[in-house]
Length: 424
Image 1 (cartoon, rainbow, N blue to C red):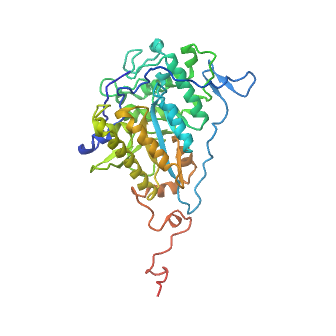
Image 2: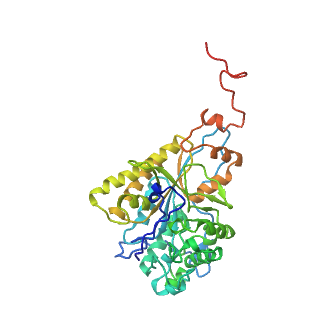
Image 3: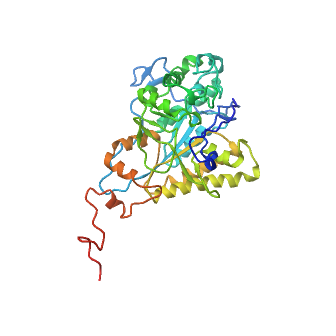
């Protein structure tokens, strides 16, 4: 399933071009096959007459509202915003490395929820590849390959459990086409709609496509649950957003931004990944594992083993510096992107796990999915959000949060007419 890594370069300074590279469909970006490990028992299939409403061929089912989703509350006057952190995963699937199951457990252990962007072709068996009709490519083409029955069964199990634990299942679409040769950056709105509908269809028909008729369904209606995405290589965002808005999406995470409070663009919340301090460099670094790798070992997914520990510590420290800058400053949500990969000996997986363990238990920190963040943003007073957007990167309110977000006018500073008298 190997494919060539590509770097998405936007309108950025040349000195920072590499650090802003989008995620690539690199070697190992697909679901690799290996000897499956011991499997736990599958959840029981729904019993006839139960409240479960099977959908279509029974690949998915409506089982009610998602468990473990807190009801979002509007900030009270003068209340300091929580510090949101989103850990998200591009092309989520379970393979022989067991990274999906590993980070499900990391989330549970640290009272966090995450967003898993599923690639639809990970639920399509190789022998049925012709069902995929990618825009601007021949039928059955995919830059990240397809899957086999064991890989699909393992991935479905992780998707099922992840959703029941409160995590979000978004989409990373299908074939992961980047670059100038028919890549997603060239796709029209209608081509994006086709890609989105196919990604949904592969999720909604995995039983038919695999023949696993007796397996338990995914416990959600994907038409209802799919509300956001990240595009391959961070390309094609403009037309994707137009298509996604028409199809009822609520957010997009395909851009690059500074650590400031998000706003809506073209009707969707812009929940882009962000630039954070990069120890040892004069420029800032995008909060994605792939970009750290490119800046450390180039396009070699397995560089110098003597550097692995240093590179991992550099990523960990970079993300923690970005966290601290927001936590002690403007409290802008921190958005982090990753892949289920063992690039450079798995150093980035270890770094992300350390960050989860470090930040998710701190006071006023909420490690949430994109959907939960969008729910919270939608619940806020628009005037309060606009005020938060006025804070610069790392800028805490000068008079404190109570005064900054009070529903009363801030007191006049000392030494001016009507201001507090100076102590004598």
